[in-house]
Length: 175
Ligand SMILES: [Zn+2]
Image (tube, rainbow, N blue to C red; front, side):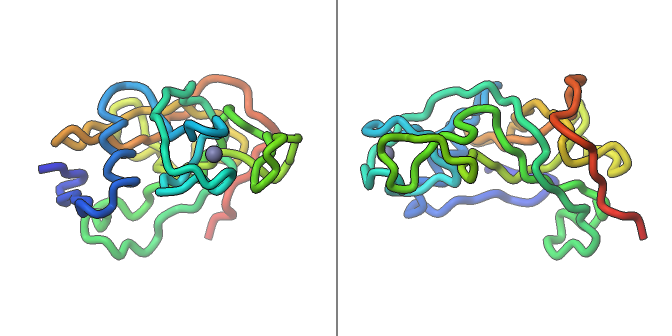
């Protein structure tokens, strides 16, 4: 059984895109579905490429490096597993790969500043526990850390790196 924070993780058999995605993270590298026709990485995982309508993907490793694009602090946990972690930072990570590369029907892949690969995950310390919210800010650089969920699945999480920030730092105002 796969589990995280004491909660069972199960993905229905008929959800192949997500099942394939979490099973592809069983090692130490972040692996994303890449369209076998147009070559665009896609996230979230899905059954058809939104750029060219191809239905086949091959998982390939990416650098696992990125920037905090946005984030919030979990203040009112709904899922019981998060009740002991009311300050868990949840972030939208913009990967270094495919930033600004066109798509969305533009098969010539002309630059498109709106396009990026952005993944949702928690900001964690090296030991996998949640990072102190005081250390989290937009534009800080992060490196992926794959958490082993068991049963051949992994969960990509994010650790602050010592790289210089990608831009001005911004934090959620305190209350
Ligand atoms: Zn495609």
